Length: 146
Image (cartoon, rainbow, N blue to C red; front, side):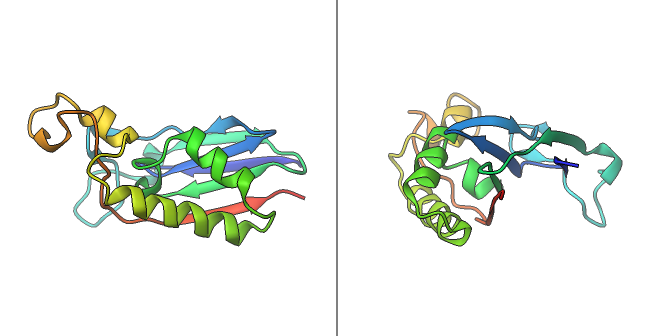
């Protein structure tokens, strides 16, 4: 029917890009900073706590789903730059996003979305300058709509 439907629980993100812009994005679901909702045996969180994204997709749209290891280290504009600088193959885009996320995660001086959010928070002294990558799980799937 031309619609993408996605459930999101936690701090993973799904983006839909069209013509170099983010046209749709899932909402991250967290209890508080650095404490995302998650499904686990000892967690009170349930699938019903998820948010639903429903958005129309068109040929040429690029869908990116990634873990917080991607979106804590790369801002949307950096992801857009990577996607549109790669060949049209989705696996090449995903590989480049993962590689860049890993490089940035190890850079203590990188300006990152995570560092910006952590700046000034108690217990996050290593991010006092609003700089620094965050080592974390990094996974990414990219789909190009045809």
